[in-house]
Length: 149
Length: 149
DNA sequence: AGCAGTATTGCATTTCAATTTCATTATACT
DNA sequence: AGTATAATGAAATTGAAATGCAATACTGCT
Ligand SMILES: [Mn+2]
Ligand SMILES: [Mn+2]
Ligand SMILES: [Zn+2]
Ligand SMILES: [Zn+2]
Image 1 (cartoon, chains in turn yellow, brown, blue, green):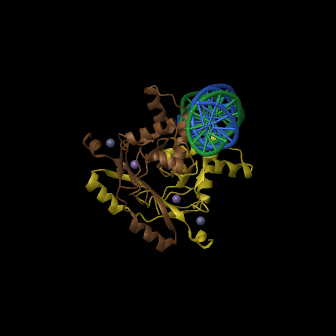
Image 2 (cartoon, rainbow over the protein chains, first blue to last red):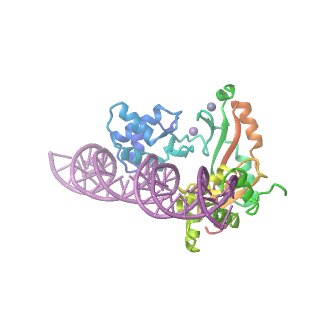
Image 3 (cartoon, each protein chain N blue to C red):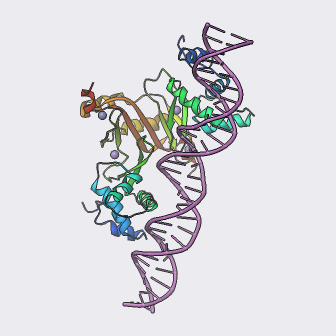
């Protein structure tokens, strides 16, 4: 648990890298840690602040997310809805985890098992291509929506 | 080979669906069939026409690609460069094929083997999620770039 | 062939998420 | 506390995607 990232010990991470840990950045980090299961967009986070009457500029939210990605605290993902979305980067996962996207209701399910190790070995054999990361999305019908037919 | 799509017999496909097979649409289709290995964007195709002094409006190209996708002649893909790209839909492939994306030189390699059948069965067992299609991209270093270190 | 009805074109404009500018403000270090 | 530097945020800009609409082209019918 020593090196586990959480909202508490981030201050040091920022300072070690020469960044200031401002109130605004804290707030953005807090929202992400409070909703670990969601895939929030910059707009989602702005909307959340607006509802709580917290004044943080959209460009600050936007730039904070870029910074958090550079700091390897979040990862940006594309779930095909026109928004860049963000999720906390889990350092237990060697590679990006996968997503099930229900075409009916739009719900998103995380798949944390890697599942691709063998394929990547195969690709190295066949194409001499050294895989560093991947992006895998499955489109279909979720358990809930299957009943509603 | 009876039902194989090519640039020749598309006229009938358009007419059967109530669409007109105009010169502009033919030209767009031709560009796609002439570059089966590329992943062209709307802008790429406009640029190609401009260089050949062919006057076709960008909105026509854009709308033609949308139509071709609806007609199941092309598929749109996102290769993380900010452009929607298109490739001919091969009806031998049950699902979308995969892409290797070289982080160094940006080259794109098609992987036509499906490779995901077993995983999709596993996902149905574990999550009761019925996979209909998928999107798989691998990021890494291609064979060419590996030497240049 | 000519006509009428409908689909398509393409210029111009709009949309909208993402990005940048820049004057003001906050932070960290001494 | 003071100073240097980084961050903020309102406003403006960017650029790919999408749309409105008047002009044009295609198709089926006479
Ligand atoms: Mn996720
Ligand atoms: Mn391809
Ligand atoms: Zn669903
Ligand atoms: Zn390469």
